[in-house]
Amino acid sequence: MPTDRFSDTVQLVAAPSAVYAHLIDPRSYVGLSPLVVAVRDIRARGDETSYVAVERIPLGPFHWNNPIRVTLTGFDPDRRLVSRVVSPGGVRLSATVDLAPAGAGTALTETIEVSSPAVLRSFVRKQATSVQRARLAELSRRFSRSVPPGRSVPPGREDLNDPA
Image (cartoon, rainbow, N blue to C red; front, side, top):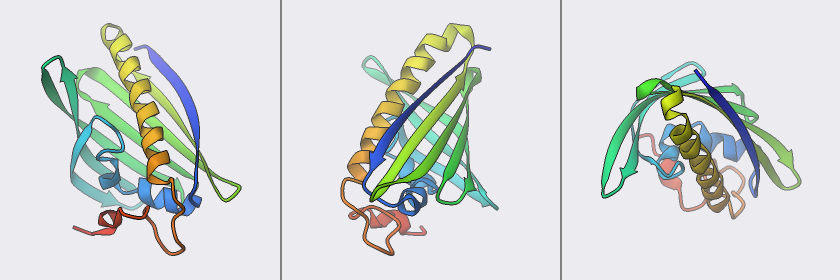
């Protein structure tokens, strides 16, 4: 199966620990990834959290709700997270997020590896690169103000700390 790999970096005005705390919570991906409209069946086991994310893919005047299985792993607290995605149609994606202190903030580098059947490759690659650009822009927006000490989420997003 063909595999594509690409990477991008964004500078955030927040400490790596605040960015990590935000990204390790599956609920933060609703709206962060522009296609993700819901997450459900969240199950934590040690350093891994598995869940189902529902992507809403536009198809002209219609849409397709694509449930994807995600395993989110924190490998190095405040430094690295990896999401592994299993999607219908044989699509497999791995997103590695590396966080590094950069001045008063964080340099976030996301590296995507995506494999898909040849017949889907162009569509999948286009979707994955578009989603990555949008996700990094949304992270920049969410962290456009510094996070006060002791806070794990951007101001105005206290709902992400809600254990519900």
